Image (cartoon, rainbow, N blue to C red; front, side, top):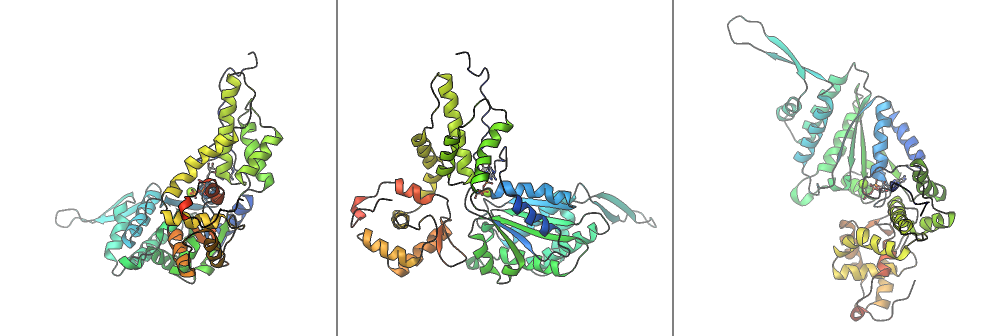
Length: 418
Ligand SMILES: Nc1ncnc2c1ncn2[C@@H]1O[C@H](COP(=O)(O)OP(=O)(O)OP(=O)(O)O)[C@@H](O)[C@H]1O
Ligand SMILES: [Mg+2]
């Protein structure tokens, strides 16, 4: 066929955790609010960036970095994904490593040494700052992890005094993993909060701004650790994209990559609807549609949206592993929630109890429901909203659950269809 593209066009969509999109849709308001936090002098409020899985926290955090740098801040950042049982010592090491990596290339450290030989003068050596220089402060400071960390930050502040640097941003992604573990007597989150609130009250020449990113379980965990966190943080909650931004998230990457393939308005509307405006789902569905179209065009067929195949692949790639990690009883419990009319929004204990008694042979009591909810909160599948209700922590999870087949032996009645 003469109108076949000679080279296979690049797929401009990037589904995947932390994958920078070709076009970042919306989020201008959040960037503006972050600029305002950077402009504080002195810093009184830190930042929490929170939202459901795949809503775009990591990629937005990445855009905060150049913004902060252009306003005179240094940026020390890290991803705490794998650190599910972080100790206070781990936290201390993490911060010292981050600081020495950041400051090593820009700060010279002066050290006095006494050369061997009688009557020789002390020599002053100048060399780049190293991990050990900051770690020695920790070792020499008596007390607990918080005392040591305060001493390190005070020293860093002195070292940076007189430079043009406004301060240092400490940005931690997946920060819900910092939670305290009372059973092991480990309180890394409390240490972090205490230290930052303390240094921020010292009016130091160099400022420190904490930026924590994580699932909606993050804020309740912070409040549990220290009640004053309510005042210490400005919370940016990312929602799904609105219609205009979702439209741009689909259309702009195609335009920017000068793709010979374009989506019709009808297809765009369908993608917006099926994705619920969630960035990860937009990227995923668009990538699949794009790939499918290239294959079809190469075969000389008319492009169409393989909706059923895409849903099956999304179930497999995104939802299935999270679902399989839950026990059978937890799955039954979530199935009950998915039958509630408000399963995509907020639901309450009593609603779950009532529905479970209607649907299951062995329903859930109120206390059992509370216990199941707690287990699912710990598993990152549910979170407690600020108004006291409960929500799924994974977007569009109830749609996936409703696509799964029930074990008929656990059912009292037929499950009401959506
Ligand atoms: N504003 C946006 N416009 C277009 N695409 C976006 C936007 N935000 C995120 N994405 C895309 O969505 C996907 C998920 O983004 P990201 O990993 O930042 O989400 P997340 O909230 O950090 O997820 P998780 O909770 O799993 O860590 C990526 O493929 C990214 O390219
Ligand atoms: Mg992320």
